[in-house]
Length: 172
Image (cartoon, rainbow, N blue to C red; front, side):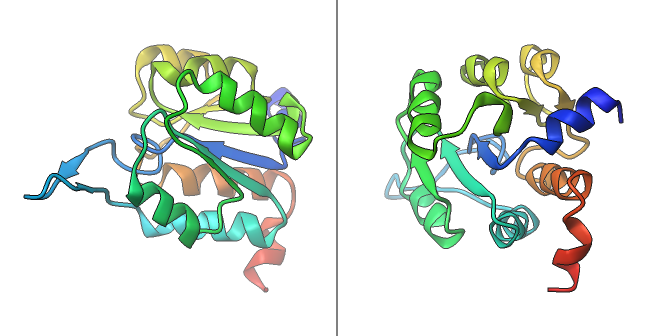
């Protein structure tokens, strides 16, 4: 890891992510009543728990609205959730103002074109490995794991380990 990347990661105290394609595998399943069903990775979820234990703020910015996302965010005690947020940059600016953080303090994880404006502004821009090419090119870091398959956990561990907070969480 380069010194420049380490320096970016060391400034992070707010973790923001997209949902479809990042916290999920991007598939949208509908039951016979037309209700949306999403699958969330338990390792990604526990990564969010670890961030909270370490004192980080967390947020979701999604261009779509979903009851499943609202329920998962509540379950994970996500600090702020923005749904129907398109363009996403407006929600991102509101989030920074509400939590009084600068771009340099924000890690943003995305996978698709609506994420680009936020990725270009966030201090630490992350693309999941199966993100579209434009997003991967705009990112400071591309995960090894796919969205919804451990990518969020990978980024969480990278941040916590780089900031020297990982070992303390293992003994807590």
